[in-house]
Length: 255
Image (cartoon, rainbow, N blue to C red; front, side, top):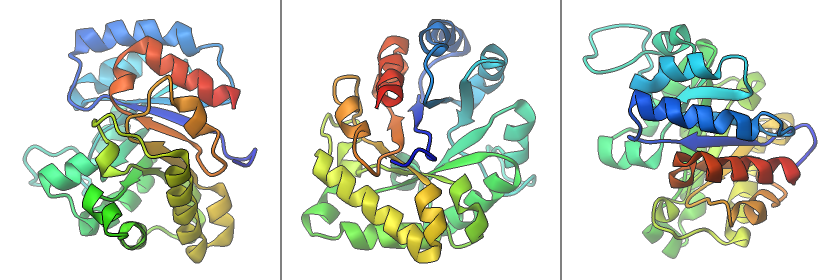
């Protein structure tokens, strides 16, 4: 990783933590990461926890991200939340295109082509998730899948804003399964993603941050974060405990 790319450790809580549980968590996390330099930190929380986490993390180094959004600023979209609503409540970023959203809720690359620039326009940092299924990897279809997702999902992002997008490579077969891509697999895929960005803009490819996600834990984080093209991690289950999440942040800062 170049010195210009500060690693980002983002914890994706998924559908966990009531507001009280979130408050207990953030009070445990803040002292554990307050003195760690050299890494950015974000928690990606359910909508119902956003305002409380923004208030509790204010003035700290921990940023607060949402886990999804609609691309329109307002409208007749029952059950949805807009980019402006997220920025208004103080969120600083949003996870987009997580495989659970794609597989369980039908989120498409066409939708993401609208969501990513909408997030940027609202002042939010988008974490765009991409990755292949187990069958796609077994069929040597990983490159095709990643090429399609990067091309389609970033099509409406101007070249000068590509470095404002964070990309998270999450092999779907490694999410919540305990399986982890080998360092070689992770580096190869993330280097390929960087080359795809470079097809759009060589300078952007050197500046864009690309995270690894998929069963990242305190005991494997250091090895993954040491890879030359890995700029941090999108952490699932291990982010639900303040201590283990703080250990991963520490591993990123120490690399």
